[in-house]
Amino acid sequence: MSSRNVAILVALLFLRVTAAFASDKLIALTFDDGPRPYVLFGTNPDHSGLSLINVLDRNGVKATFFVVGWRLTPKTWGEPHHEENIGVTCIDAAEQLVRRGYELEDHTYSHIELRGAERKWGERWVIGDVDRGAQEIKAITGTQPIYVRPPDWTIPDDARRDLEQQGYHLLSISRSEPIALRDVNSLDYLCTARNQAACPKPSLADAVLKQVEQREAQGVYTHILAFHELSTTTAAMQELITDLKARGYRFVTLTQYMQLVDPKPATDNIH
Image (cartoon, rainbow, N blue to C red; front, top):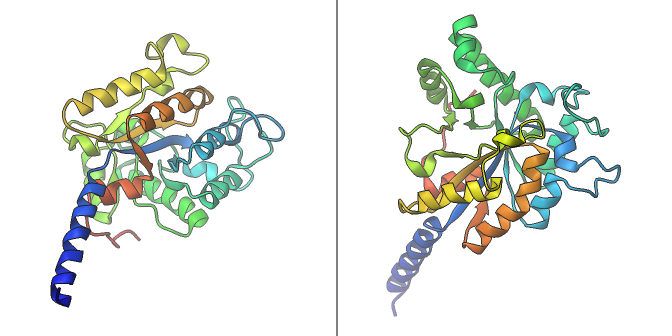
């Protein structure tokens, strides 16, 4: 066989493998509202108890964390009235996530609902809040975050357009998005200790799996799952990961997911 034919055969095999890889069953597991050290590492002094990182590491899952910028300021460990101080700052937690191979993306600086914020302070404030959150993340990772999940998935149309022009990719639950790029809202925020009665039934894991099955019925086998850094979510995560792996799903970071599901040229527009 000539060298030219060998090259053609190799190219065809590469395309076939790449296509199969890209059409794999994929899960991008994401968590909002952190870093929350007591959730990530548990409340035991030796961090040996139930913790989100223990569950993810034990299962070989690399997730993406949409973190809040104000938490990444010096000496900050969380909200005093709602979170336990385990002696680990949010910056320390974020740095540990990066060292362990997890991904940090932007959940704004303030975590304020952005439509209301624009009515009060204008679009420039909204853009600045996203940028400020991104800069806090960049100070940890050395890399500009590209992906933004607005609080409650709400953002004014003009701010969305201008952020996209800057190179940001905004995540959404809107039906205007292709289903493979549309977040699956786990509703885990309804399962907190103070709100258990509203938690999806029969369980959080089962409710998320039902949404996955509904998407599969439409021929979609790639999913971005949106959770929050909550102890109640951590408690459901082992069951969910086990069930999804049994269904043939592979877990990837959001960046890897987008490279496979929605490959577009990288942008360098973000300042």
